[in-house]
Image (tube, rainbow, N blue to C red; front, side):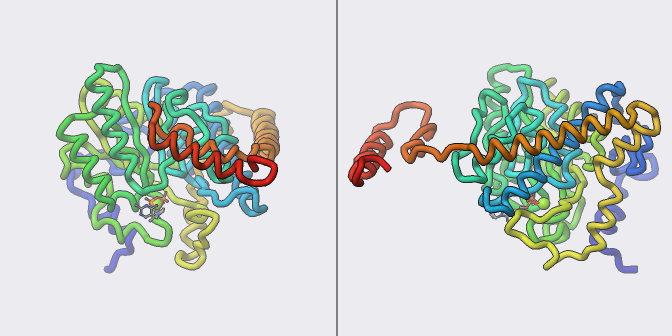
Length: 375
Ligand SMILES: Cc1ncc(C[n+]2csc(CCOP(=O)(O)OP(=O)(O)O)c2C)c(N)n1
Ligand SMILES: [Mg+2]
């Protein structure tokens, strides 16, 4: 019988034999049932679970507002995280303050965990700044649009903290499509041979714009790691408990000198690639419907309800907070000032730079040449 792409990815991975642990690490089913895993587990208090639920709901709300702002012409473009909240909140909440994270352009949930003001995320997409936050202040690097290049930055950073003897680890985010990039494969080699304290966190959302996963790999992505000489694991990317447990363990191992690990968070991009994309052109509606049943937020809600860890008042209060946050993000986005044209020269180099200073002067003189001085 011919297997479809998704079945092939699961069915062909029986290498460990009957004793092998389940391939997909899952601690919370889509129905909100808690399950055990032989290698990874986590003990969360009801308060901690309520905190994760709050994170998930609030980042989804920020994302929704950003999509609306783009549709109304207030942002040039937006890359929605819809469906990937658990992967991002789970892994983001596994980080300690001193760990360093390197995102792509979609890690709004991780940014939230790093304490970046959501409005600052919008600046880049509104075209009023080149990043919007200080990476050193949040231990959260600027968004990287060039697919895969941040994996090399992260490995370089990890090798640096390794040499400093710091009790810290690095995490780098990238997509399923990025695994086909040379940069990512080179970063795997460097991380492996130097035993760098880096966690490779791949959000396999099944699509790289319109390219499906089967155009990237004939084997499950997490198994790529073994060829490079480090462990890989596939986690249910819609399960915030599992993402937290696995990432926490991987970061701990890295901090303790055990080197890199690849985490493949198996998830789904429920929205368009970006607001410039129309996924109805290349994927069937049934796929989205199937993944809606695995929604990362609904399963936490079901778990909280079933176990009576939260009541209706709690859910109502989170909804109200989300509505306030949405309003606040919108208001402050519209109020973001246009930058002064000369700001483009700031933060290019850490040290003064003669050529840049000269170019800045030339541009200032050009601006001053207009009637009424600088425009
Ligand atoms: C080096 C490079 N090549 C091509 C692109 C254009 N591009 C932007 S996003 C994207 C797909 C990335 O897919 P994936 O890695 O799965 O991440 P996702 O967007 O699904 O999160 C491509 C090809 C780019 N930004 N950089
Ligand atoms: Mg993808």
